[in-house]
Length: 390
Ligand code: GLY
Image (cartoon, rainbow, N blue to C red; front, top):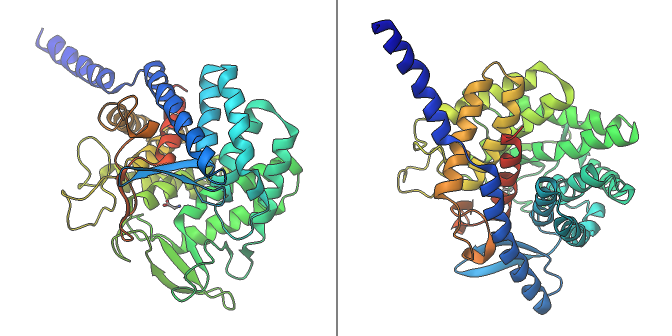
C-alpha cells in the first residue's frame, strides 16, 4: 500500500508539472496573429510616410521604429508571416508573406555584412520551403554567393562587421554561426560543395576560438588575416569582455545544433550540449527561464531580461532534444521558456504597436533597445511554437 502511494506520487507529480508548463499552440498562434494584424496596420501607415523603411524592428521611447532593408533585422518580419502561413495554411498569410518578402530582396547582393542569413535566409528560405518558388531559390543562391565573399581562408572564418575598424581588424561574432544555414542550404540547392566547406571551416574555427572551458562564448573574436592568429577576444554588446552576453549564448546553441543537423559531426553535438548545459544550469537565471541580458551583469537581479535570447534558446532546444541523449531535459526546459514567454512576456492585444513579445534587450552598452519588444524575439517565438508541436 505504502509502495503504491509512493509510485502514485512519483508518476502523477511530474505529469501535472509538465501539463502546467504546456502552451496551447493554437491559442498562442491565434493571439500572435491578432497582434500581427495590428503590426501590419502600423507598418502600412508608417510606410506611407517613409516608403524606404520596410520592416518593423522595435518600440523605443514609445516610438514605433521601422528599418530599411539594409538593417540586419529586416528579414524577420516577412519571415514571421511565412510562419503564420505554415501554421494556418491560410492564403491571407501567403499573400502577405509574398508581398513583404519582396522588400528585402535587394539585400541578396549585399556584400557589406555577414547578416544575410537573417536578412535573406529567414524570409526566402522559409518562402522557398513552403512554396518551392524558383525565384526564391535564385535569391538564396545569390545571397550565399554574396556571403561567401566575406570568407578568408587564412583565418578560416567569415568576417562579420566592416564597421569600427579602429577597434578590430577582422571581427567575427558568435552570431555569425546563424548565417551558416544559408550556406548549407545553397550546397543542397546547387550541388556546389564550396558553400558547405566554408560553413564547416567557419564552424570549426569558431569552435576552437570562441568558447571558454565552461562552454560560454565570447562575443567578438578578432583575427589577423595574414597569420590566421587570434588578436583579441572582446565584447560589443555584452557587459564585459569576459562576460557571457545572453543572446550570444543563444546564437551559439542554435548555431551548433543546426550545424549538427547539417553535418552529423559529433563535435557540434557535444558543443551544443555544452552550451545548453551552460544556459539551463546557470544559477542566476530566474525560475521562469528567461535570462538576464548578460549572465554577469553585477546589477542582477535589477538588470533587464532578454526575451529574445529565451525565444532563440527555446527554439534551439526543441531541435537539440531530437539529437541529444539529454532530449527530455531540453524539451522540458524549452516548454518552460515557451510557457513563460506566452504568459508573462506576451503583449496584450493591441498594445506595443502589435509586436508579440515584450522585454528584450537589444544593445545595452549602447543604451539602445532596453526592455523593449523586438522583431527577432517574435520570429524565434513563433518558430519555437511550431517546433514544440513536432
Ligand atoms: N546579431 C546582433 C544581435 O544579436 O544583436
